[in-house]
Amino acid sequence: MAEQRNITVAVTGAGGTRMARHVLAALERDDRVAHVDLLVSPNGRRLLAHEFGGTADADVTRTLLGGDSAKVSAWDADAWEAPHTSGSHPGWGMIVVPCSLGTVSRVAQGQASSVIERAADICLKERRPLVLCVRETPFNLIHLRNMTQATEAGAVVYPMIPTYYNLPGTVAEMFEEFTARLLGFVGLDQTDYYAWKTGGSTAARERSAARASGAPDG
Image (cartoon, rainbow, N blue to C red):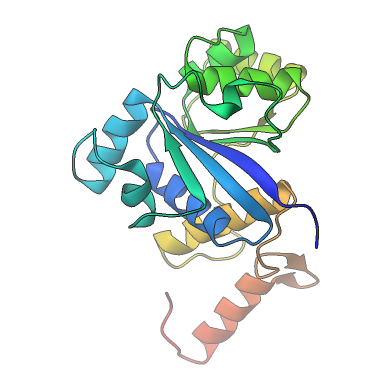
C-alpha cells in the first residue's frame, strides 16, 4: 500500500462551499489519506453559515461532514501553532476549495498574513502541491496576473468549472464529477466513471442508454 498522505484543505470566502463538503467527504473515506487538516477563513465560515444554515461559529467539521471525524482536525484561523504553518511538518500539500481571488492575490504576493496563506506559502517554499480551486467569473486583468504569478511560483489554478460531456442530470452529479476529477488530478483516483473512452465518457454513454430505455434521468 502506498504511503498515506497528510493533506491540508482550506475553505475561503468564495461561494461554493458545498463543493468543499464533497471533497472533504471523499478524502475522509479514502484509505490513502491518513489525516486532513481543515482550515476555514472567517469569511469562509460566514459562507458556510449562509449556504448550510446555522451560525459562523458552528463546528465546521460537523457542518461539512454531518458529524465528527477522527481523520479531520479543524483549526482556528488564528492558530499559528498549527503543524501546517511549519515546513518541517510532513504534509503532502494543500487544496483550497473554494479559493477566493483575494486569497490568490495574497498567495501570489507572498503575503502570509493568515494561517491559510502561511500554509499555502509553506507548500510553495517546500515544493509541495498547492491546488487553488478558484470560484469567480469573469476574471479581470489583475486576477489573471495574480493567477499567472501563483502558477509561476508552483501553484496549480484549478477553477471550479464542471464538465458537460458527461451529461449531468443533477447538481449533485456535477459536484461528484468535479470532486472525482480534482482528486484524480492530485493522484487520488476515485472512479473511472467520468473517464473519457472511445465513443464518449462512461458517464455520458450510460446516461444516454438510460434515456433511450426510458429510465428516469437523475
